[in-house]
Each structure stands twice: as C-alpha cells, then as structure tokens.
Amino acid sequence: MEKIDPLKISKESRDMDTKGIVQFLYSHGPKFWSWGADKFTDINKRGLRFNVNAHHHKGHVYLFVNGADLFDIYITTSHGTIKEKICDIYLDELVDVIDKKIEWIDIYDD
Image 1 (cartoon, helix red, strand yellow):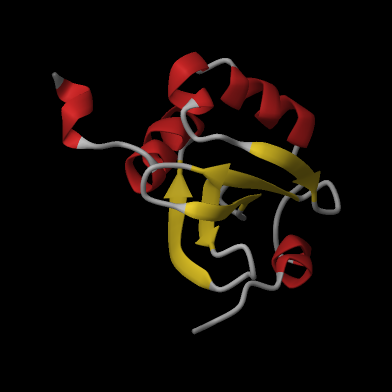
Image 2 (cartoon, helix red, strand yellow; image 1 turned 135 degrees about the vertical axis):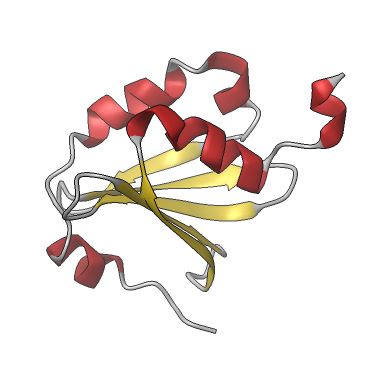
C-alpha cells in the first residue's frame, strides 16, 4: 500500500487558505461534527490534514488544491497509508463527498 507524501503533494498544489477551509467545514454543523474531526494541521499553506473518528473511517483526511483549482482528497490511515484518493472536487461538493466516504449510513435518510 502506498504512503502519502504530503510535502511532495504540497509542492505540486496551489496555495490554500487552510484557516478559511476549516471555518468552511465547521459551518456545515452536525454533518461535520459527526466526523469527530480534530488536530487540524496546515501543510506549507498548501494543504490541510485533520484526524477523523467517523463511522466508516478513523484516521486522517488530507485536502489539497490542484492545478485546476479543485480539491484532491486523500483518506489515509493514521500511519499515512492511502486508503482512497478522490480528485477534482468542487468546493460546494467537498463536505458531502467527504461525508459519504467516512461517515454516511443509510439510516441517515430516514
């Protein structure tokens, strides 16, 4: 399994307002809070890492902005092994895409 290299990815990524992204995530209330997200870490002002303790995933989520100004999401173990990479996500889709991968279950539709 491949390990993430956040410093290498950050060199290929665009600048990111990580504080603004964290505020954006928090603004999604209960959906975001259900992830158990904490330990937000800025990666050279070009990436964001945070821990999650969600229904489907316990580990890290990394966010980077690619050359097309879209988000690339890496879902990794707490030791950095990449479980999934999701590319080219628009800002307005970001929270829902992450939620579907790490937390959402069918019962939430009831």
